[in-house]
Image (cartoon, rainbow, N blue to C red; front, side, top):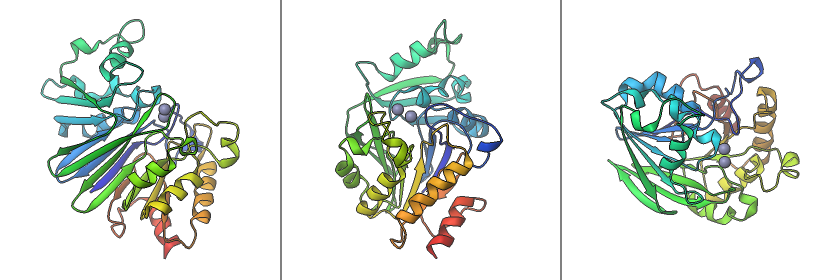
Length: 291
Ligand SMILES: [Zn+2]
Ligand SMILES: [Zn+2]
């Protein structure tokens, strides 16, 4: 099982020479396992996924954490939507009485967007999820549950062939879901977690819906996770700042055996920790740290 990161930024996309290492697209990931390719979230990274792999993807499942801007903005620019042979199913929990279909309909209509959902050539389906549940795609099991974030957010757990990858979604564990997320992440090979703020920043941003790298290490250690990947990077954090954040998390996790990396756009990780994917700079660094 592998995870591909297409967008790792929170809040708003960024670009520029100081963001080269980590990239600036907003949240979009892809789980690859047992011949299945499952997408998580429609941030601006989804446009890149469509551009690079659009031709290979015909039957697409997208699991949505929630509907904040940074998680839906890539949808109108997802290439396979314009392929009449493609079918796209979006799985999402309703938020504030609105379904994902309602939200995309209002996003993709005048005066904000010229192409409406009704004239998209691909076959579109919407699956309204309960707040907690389980589904299977081939040999991949997907479990989900609700975590704390303004308006709600879904965490996902993917299981295949004794391997486990967990994605926290946008989450503020200090507001009360720490224990639940630890339980949900038990024994994961990889935990990918929202770590937007330094602890010093979090002091003034309580209630904004995000966690710190220290929170993420605490969850990972208590859940017995092998590798922690920090994501939902703050748009004000350039590459240097993000390396500082990673250092902080690695120091805090020191001697525990936990591998810690920063997610970046274009990163491909295998759930098997020993399998290094060439070109993944942070992964190589973390293996050295742990050696
Ligand atoms: Zn977000
Ligand atoms: Zn959010």
